Image (tube, rainbow, N blue to C red):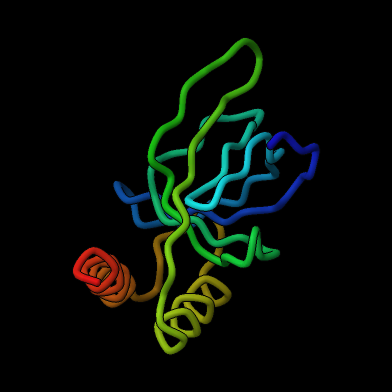
Length: 121
């Protein structure tokens, strides 16, 4: 399903563990994820949607490629337990864009634990 909704997302890049804000356009929505367009590349990492998308607050960027004068990316939704979600939201709010996260080890541990729980369910 195509839409013209724009959204603000924070991305925690896996390779740098720093947060960056992006304004994106949602171009495709499914039960497992969302396709987006951006004016700049989106690095693989954890996505925190500023406003829930299809009921989801978090996702993982699985791919990004250039397409003309924009970049397209795919984000798979991920569900976190409430306590982990609150913890990550607090860390994102306390961190400054383009700066290393305050507590990267615990953020990654929480994400990995949640992914492990989802794949074992």
